[in-house]
Image 1: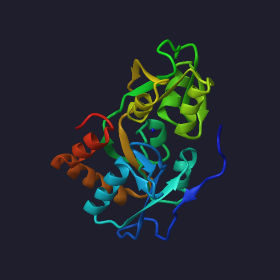
Image 2 (image 1 turned 45 degrees about the vertical axis):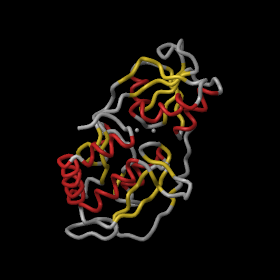
Image 3 (image 1 turned 120 degrees about the horizontal axis):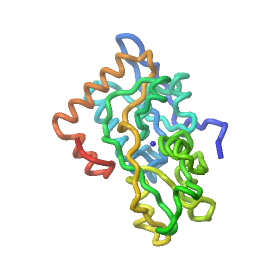
Image 4 (image 1 turned 90 degrees about the vertical axis):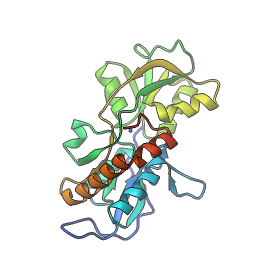
Length: 241
């Protein structure tokens, strides 16, 4: 899925060579760690969620040694390109714009409906102010529709903007927003939904075609044996394949 913070926080960066040619060292899996249920940091400070479980299984099937790295969303693509890690596995929707800069594997989720979370069912999402995380498909969608958009660096900041009245609603993946509506009676999901993007895939550098092929093959095997659908249902991240 994604106030602008200029500094980059890369956590848990450990030794490992960039994937190259016909051999591999440690593959560093870059994620945000702040977008549940796709990815988040658990109480032990470790990456957790749907993509942690998925990524570990993909690495096992691809016979790769993988380590996890977290990075702020607004610089996650530049830091992949510059070599701070080797993949992006962070709830990132496949779009033509992103595909001009990096390559994507096949999708490992179907397009997840984007929903509006608001403090009132009467919220005006067309004529009001809608919050979205910077550099996300939701922010681009709202801008193209002529909606007044407030962009924030983190998904938590978008929720705070609705709570404090700075925004009339927030647009994000339904699977991310639904728990807030369930846990907080002052917030509610609007009936209107948007279907944006072509599903979520792993991002890799354009020069890492062999790595992309390894993960594509692993994703295909998980689709074929049903284990990917099991994870999708477990974490509630969209429609099964």
